[in-house]
Length: 124
Image 1: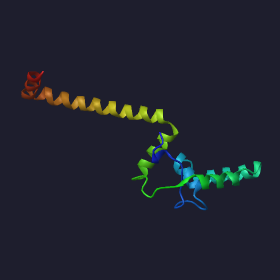
Image 2: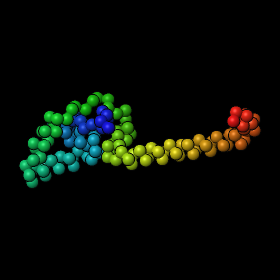
Image 3: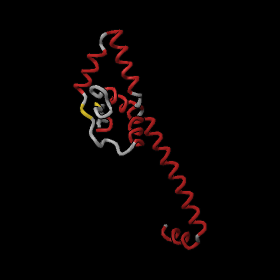
Image 4: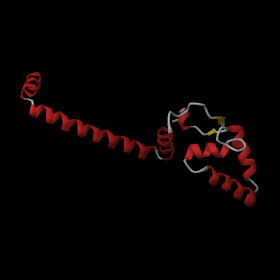
């Protein structure tokens, strides 16, 4: 599952230096300040934070301009990246609910309209 919406990008438009933390925020949904703090702590504790930041900055592609239509779509793709199985379950649940509601509407119109009911029976 490597579509444009499930790829890690640098977000230079919302970023401070190279856009790595803003890209990680977009990818995971975790605020960029926490990513910046994580890189600082990683740098202080192991000295690996700055090289990791620049490696991600060089390896990650620049974020396309119109990747998402709106904020809701961005949140949806963050949930997909975090847990695809859970997202698929939620979508199946929504479709079951729509199917149930459609069956109720169908039942209402068929029972209250004898002519339509007879036509459906004739088609069977």
